[in-house]
Image (tube, rainbow, N blue to C red; front, side):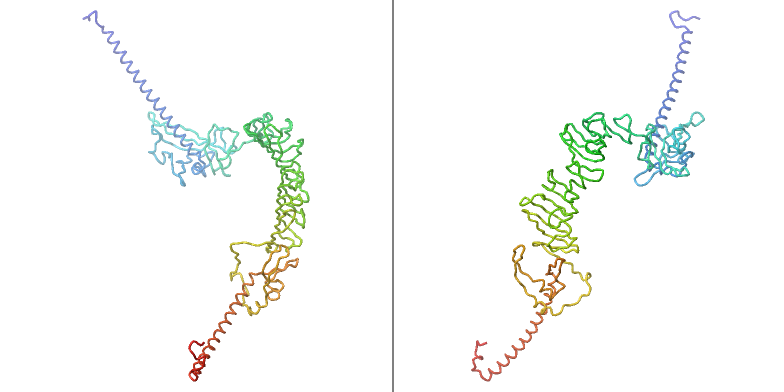
Length: 525
């Protein structure tokens, strides 16, 4: 039997069917392989994601330490069954192994964790010499045929261990970090493992050298280490320079060949492009100067024994606004140890100053060891207030205050006894009016020598023999005298009342007998 010559033959049909079937098998095989590749990619992505999260947790030293503390850092199989994540003030278990939680999975492909192992077997880590180890995280990739596939990934840990090699603290770190930098024992700070560091210098000679390659420096901060090759710069300096500013500052330590002198430490500044002016200098001997390059004492030129002085630029260091500390007499009246402000180097009307001084001020109510406040005005030195060494305060003028309060608590006192004969004693005192010799001021008061005869405990005398009276102390006998006087008045009041009654009785009797007497008439008292 034959097919029509214009149709398709049997052979062609069978061939087409075979080709179609082969293509179907190829497509099915390709699809299966594509699914496997997709699964592998997704699983690998899950592993990478989980590993990143684990490393992020262990980067925190507290979480890492709480997870592995006490574990042998160099070789511990199944070191832990979960990570300890810090959550506020407590820790929670995360990324548990399937040993403690068989149903715990991670990612889209239901990834599981088989184990956590500590090991420093690899060459790039070593607990003893480098303080590093590996955390090997073994992942369960799932089942292939009848077998379960697994893969291990490592995380770098920096560790601090005790003598037995057990972890005391730890933290994860990236492998990309330079080996030149090491972590400190707190697993947070870092330090340079050795050698010198420089910026701008090919061969550093100090732990840190920062140097500009040209002078003067442009803008910014420059740290120069003994730049002897540049004229005028034989020094170590920190310079603060800004081309937009008209003024620059430098902190210097001057070298042996510098014009300023060896070993000086200074701060100088000046207009940009001009030589810097020294503003503050400390010499190698400890002398300090402000506004001078060559201090010869603790502060500035120190004439007349001055130990500390800040002054305006002047040929005379005592002219202008001054701040002076001295251990010797710097002015008149044996003023020593002075803190002075004013124009002290001048004379006459131009001499004006305010001075706080120690030691003795002649012809005043004070002793050595006192603190004296005085002023110089129109060339005249006058003391105004003195605090002596036993705490007494002397004031040359008036004291104005809202109130003056003196301690009077019973708990501060002993041998408390009442006063006697206060009215008689007070009567021995006399008030006087007088004129002060020094100021010419008229005043009222008592004479200390007269008070001393009655109440010696209320009179004070300094080493110069000047006496003072405690008017506050006189308050007690005055109060007692008033009370004593009041009692006398009340006694006389009783006597007067009795006498008045007797007089009235006599008047009544007489008027009954002699009613026409004048004192019995109406209106007569």
